[in-house]
Length: 114
Image (cartoon, rainbow, N blue to C red):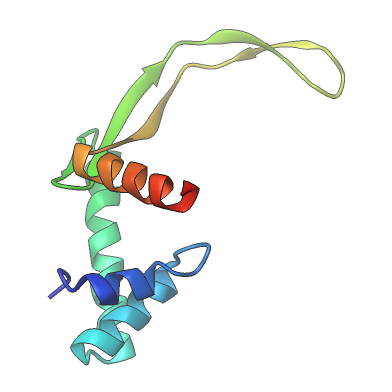
């Protein structure tokens, strides 16, 4: 289904991939209604969101991992005024691309360079 490389490459041709692009792809490829496509995409992202909010990491095989990192508070500077400010401790979400994704991005970059 999504292993159809031509369909995926068509989806990725634009500069930026949006949720609307993914919905359009589901509608065109699988015959979903626009409402069904939106529900599927929203449900997918809602599931990822819920796991991260609960403090759990998300691992998508062949794609990558969304990781949670705790950052310590640190001194900072207001760029407008130069005033020193304390940047508070916080938890952030980071993404680490999987090996398969990194390899494909590297291959594409090499193809574009030649």
